[in-house]
Image (cartoon, rainbow, N blue to C red; front, side, top):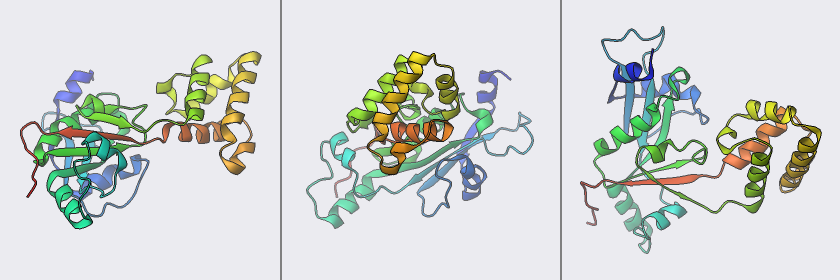
Length: 247
């Protein structure tokens, strides 16, 4: 089916824990869902005979905010800073909800459905601020595509240097989420390129204890990429129709 025809036959509806359980194992943090504020699911409508076994195509989970988030202060101009802990928590709980999970069934990825889930459900939560933290935000910025603003901590120099070095040998930033693809590219490098990137990787690994002596190969590439892409990105969205609650 064409992309547009699939998307038109999917609808966002209030979800349940069972919807999350159906897709949880596709998330890098496959874990039991505890307390949550809201769940929405992306499901086939009655006009589409979905592939066998597909009942839920995507799911998004909203939870209460985490009290201490450094980049929140930057994003909100320290709006929730300077209060005692009890007052701060009360203000956060009134004004903020956090997106803790966005999962799309693998057969339906690359269709923009993650962004759609975020964009269309944020106004339904009925709070002034929606926030999210994404470990892979730098290479898969679907929160930004949904209208959220990104805030990132400064990347360590060693990460910037290695990302630039990889780009010089043909490995681009958007490919860093795929260790096997990166490894295939590294395996095909000419001698000069292979020697260059090997030196860069060894320098990078000097900061990681016993890992500094890892042998070249997929396992090492997977570890290196996990460090390059693990820098969390903080996202925030202000509901234009709601004012902050201060009492």
